[in-house]
Length: 376
Image 1 (cartoon, rainbow, N blue to C red):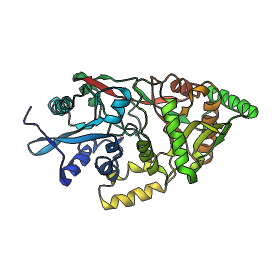
Image 2 (cartoon, rainbow, N blue to C red; image 1 turned 135 degrees about the horizontal axis):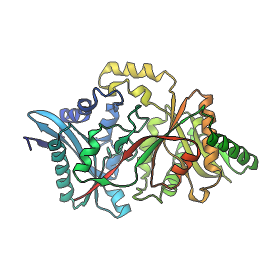
Image 3 (cartoon, rainbow, N blue to C red; image 1 turned 180 degrees about the vertical axis):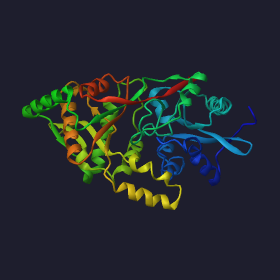
Image 4 (cartoon, rainbow, N blue to C red; image 1 turned 180 degrees about the horizontal axis):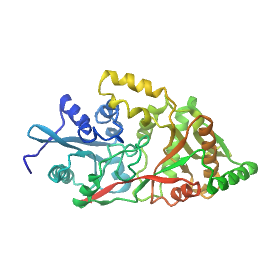
């Protein structure tokens, strides 16, 4: 295939090439938010990465004439496969120049990797983390992505479909809502929230970071209970959840990490985080020492967006006032703290509750991502 050579990543220099390859694809894209290289380096390190506690992964670079032209990872999540009784190979870090031969060589290499391990399908793209920058961007190129959301070139969708990949599930949606917006749906929700507060029974509180382990236990239970109905739901490994949450502790505002309680039981979670992508997009992935100064400077600014990364309510409380109270309380607190808009991402179209709730709240879809599957 035009002298394309797929080689595994072994040395420190090769890891650096692998991790910095996206700059060749997105370097001139004003919407791209470069990943933080120290975090990416940790994620692909078998000694430090959370993924390696539950599976194995390898990383590959496509070379042509001595130059890198693409990257990909192949992974077996043994924990997820056992839980879901499947034999899937998770692929990710799938970046490539706009040439079918390059993408095809990478895909075929991962297919061989999967077949050697008796895996029968490719699932992705996921960069090992099921919650960070996954999927291919299908719609929404008018603004940069929010925290933990990804960005891909327009040609990626066509290439995936050209190779026979099919949507693995409903598209993943990002919603936006202006905190100052005064629409009929928002006014109706305020009335419902006021009535629910008068009835009582539901307590909304901020996060208790002094008892972090207990809070993580509650979130872990909510994740594995509230989302269990979704097709292809992958139950959360507690270590993976802890690894995802702890990096945000230094920037999280406990007042904006909301929990709902009924009779002392945690029944809902609605976490709002400063949209750090507003600062990260200026930090060049921390490739150079002076990039740390840039990041520090932009981190001093008040973000416009509060990113809400999950809406979890125990199934027995669906259709009650819990979600309305969480949403209205977070909008009120976000406005008081100077935020302009909320990002709610990502939720699947397969989720019968969240899209309905988002519509009732007067939000608008502003990005759409797609995860693919290819049987081999």
